[in-house]
Image (cartoon, rainbow, N blue to C red; front, side, top):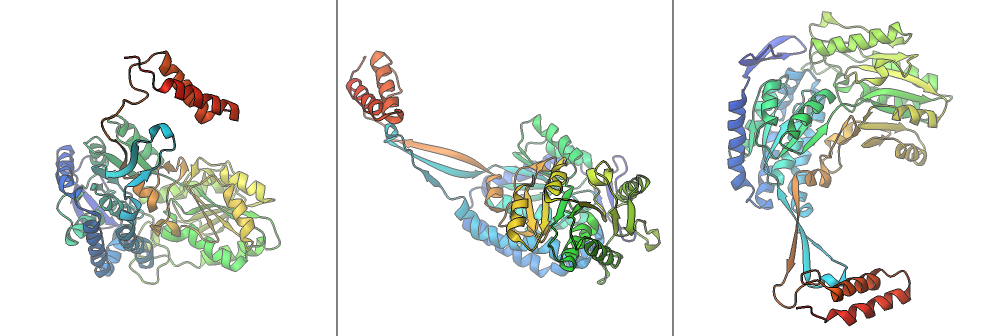
Length: 521
């Protein structure tokens, strides 16, 4: 929580609304000092070989594993999520990322020799080399305050970059801890630096001398940082909002599918960009049973403090997010939606709690169907056909993820290929962010750029082409001097290489050879 330009930021446990810490709100001069520290460290870190960086990542993995209990408790305290989710959604991905990028970064980014097929370029060799960019700024969100920044930092340092992390003001303590973990793992000072603060701190970081910006947050925030980065032509990668759709085909098993849908809608209290926020059920004999099972499982979820081992739904992050959920549900009810379960805030629990809510009789012009809710709300529409479900799923400004649920995997894959998103899950949802082997990112207002996997590594390097030619010998055909003979050489070469018939190919070769040796001066 931030008030104006306060010198410190108060860190609050959303389960209890109690103060758990305070951190400094850094200004432009302090941000610039952090960026300069990273730039200085980069001069040495970029020269370390892949094997050295891999050893550091493996040591980081040991440090994370050794402090897993402390980290899970810290995450659950500062952002309220259940302990199970702190372990599984926040820690497993970074641990796997340490291993995968330690094992695969060198292989993915080794120099590549490129074959040039034009015979006129016979004397040349070409290769592609991959070089780190420099200082990478990461502005990370509060909803996955450990996993999201850690996955990006691991990739950045594996490729030889240095990082300045600005965590969300709502998860500053976790951000500070991330910086400490890299030091404990033996990374040199400046390879990972953390700056805490509010939006003015983030703005100062965007305006500083960085070579890449990775931003995860709202669409409005993404547009703002992109406009700021454009002033210095800093390349950006944006992971923004989502309004992810689930399509359930008639043959999907009701009980199993209901359990998956409920988890996808309500894990992390629905505060995930890849949450299931719209459900389209293709009408069939199991439709009513599926709705009944969804309501049954949603209504049975236990609300409470993230530190309570029995808790399944924690709080929303703050009063503003709680008010947003209340507003969307109330608006939908006023417009004719029915609440099948939930639909109420729970101030009696002491924090920012809202009951897991299932809505039906919703329309596609309702805010709850078009704008990101980021809360424990699942609107359900029954449609007549797969085509209608796909049409409605694609009728969104967002395009991060979607899911398709069916026993018929071939049919589900056909539907998946028609969806305009970055990731489609068949018979599951959300989990892929924790997999370092596969790309992550979206389309439309969900942002652009890809993180994780080989594609994420390419987003963090300069892809440089180096071409080599031995000096000496005759000049190249495209060098000076020009003249009629050189024109005939060019015409003949084009005909030989790209003639539209055998005769034109032969004729081109003749013209080329007849004029090749003629010198103008």
